[in-house]
Image 1: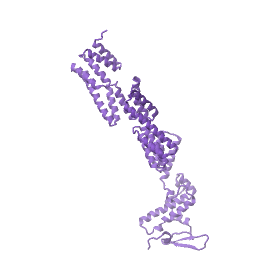
Image 2 (image 1 turned 90 degrees about the vertical axis):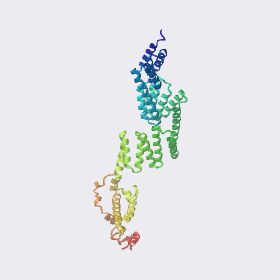
Image 3 (image 1 turned 60 degrees about the vertical axis):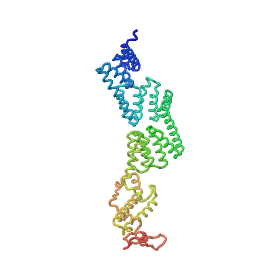
Length: 457
């Protein structure tokens, strides 16, 4: 009815702004100032629409024009400051994005969105950074809000795909990347992400196939290649590290396996499988304190019977490891037979007997006496089936009445080698006498000849 009235366009612009329809409101505000360039409210509304949509530079021009018409206008002065603040936040965010300081970018975008609530560009940048920070539900929410208003928004489709990609839902992620590229064929980020996703999926599957076929060397190479594709994909890379750790454990490269599992939990500290794999490697390398720590972490997260038993086993091995290792002292395997234990004792007892080292320094003599006593202790425990069983099960030997502090290694030595006609040490130049059952003569050898040359008097 009255198409040339600037106020009507200005009023409709104000109404559309209240409804959050800033793009439509911008058209009316621009029409109002075309009809009347001296219409201050029209310039203010145009600037406000530009600012709400994220075009801070255009907003500044509109607010400057309003100030030219009314230099004391408080609203124009404040909005001009707001527009400049948004431009500054944009500048900082751009720099911080290049530095990969995504947390700072999110902060800047939150501040900018206070003045530009309808800016999809700011929202998308914030969502992308949230995805980079692993805050996937928040990023998904922002992208979904935009897609509800504009289902063809390629940037929002890309962010949805990015979240799925980083959550190791690679097949679904590829679908969103492809959809984004249909909407915007030159979308560089979607193109790179789609290529990485497909390559990562292929390498991981090939690695899994090689592992199942027992080709561990090839599996290791494939997992390593997959880890080089995209360092930003934390969750998938955590799985790849754990898979490679499993390969290393199969190859008995336990230190490498532990390192891979450590890298996995650094990327994802909730990754139970990596903790379990590393704990087993710690057990295999007798690093029981570390194994207990990992099993405790697992049990605190998932209180299952299986995890409880694994923890108990590790705690038992830790307890056993803090005692003397009698098998190691005798130099025998834990499955050694009775004869093997006796042979080992004979060898070690003769090796460390004090008379053999009587000409050595006081320090060496003391050390050898200590070893001689430990050999006797070890034989006493491991040659007794009941004590051996208790020792192997981690039970306290003191409960058996064994006071190792009063232990006499010489008694064990004499009992083992026999009395008269047997083997005896009675001093530095004592003789070692052996009696052979099939022959009556007794053969005696000087200790010097038995043990080799020692320092003479």
